[in-house]
Image (tube, rainbow over all chains, first blue to last red; front, side, top):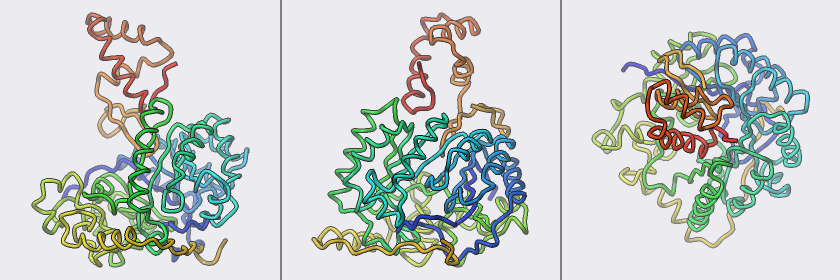
Length: 365
Length: 75
């Protein structure tokens, strides 16, 4: 089929990270010593802009672990892209905030693990919370628009009101309260992270009320854990439709979790191919593009161009086959695998199990 | 706000989002340069030769919608 134009590039510039969050979705087998150079990234950025990309997110890992980040931001602004930094904030001292602002950085999305130090640091597996508070103040003092991203799960979901309060205190313009989606380490730690039905219902009420109360001051975006949904999420707005991700070593991914969730998908690399060719021609971008790949019940479903059959990675993780309907869908023949997880969790009064912290690739801390 | 080189249309970019502007929104936002809302309405009324009273509600609604989403600030 004919490829549409992409709107956003997620630039995962390194998988190195000082935090060890148990819901991290990054793979650990990518070699740090093969990361793309600044020159290679500049070429990728220009090729992405030529393809139609309007926005770039610098992510990771922790993008600040790259000392040449400001250079990459400048290259993106020169290509007329809107630039957004997605960061834990660790490593963002005064000089770097100023340098990034001078380079043209448009916005920072700062992650928080919770609203208070003890729990936040326990989740991060690092002493990070106090440093994040300082970083948020620096970003606001510099005049860069600030969004806070909270990853929500069973251990912190009951603190939603306090998290929203923290966002107000820190002067954030946007808050994302996104429940963990189950890929990577989060899939491994699912039993420890998935909230109960009662928690999810209460959290949604709190988020909805806060959204109304803060309208015009803070834009609040709440994401349910999709296991509790009836219909699947419109993952990526369709495979190969609007987004592309380039990982630290230059592999181009239709979705950031696809490299670990869909093992039989082979990815092209920007060192070997032009981005335009990869986007339009590669097997990985075309495999689930459009509706041709769909099995029933998706193929004849009136929702097929609304939710696109849900998430390919979730289908692969839960059924072993990426080309099946996302089992979150109530019409999926595999919905029982999700229902069983929910039933076990909600019928047990046991404490959730401990989680396993993410380890860093190649043992680099 | 910038021009999408692929379509020539104006777009408003924000974290993880793109809003494609229709011509009306674009004409309103292009005037958000320190003018008051009344001045914006007056300027549009003159440009398109429409009664400002007819325009006022639509302009205020468009601006309020963008403000609710934290895409613009009204001061």
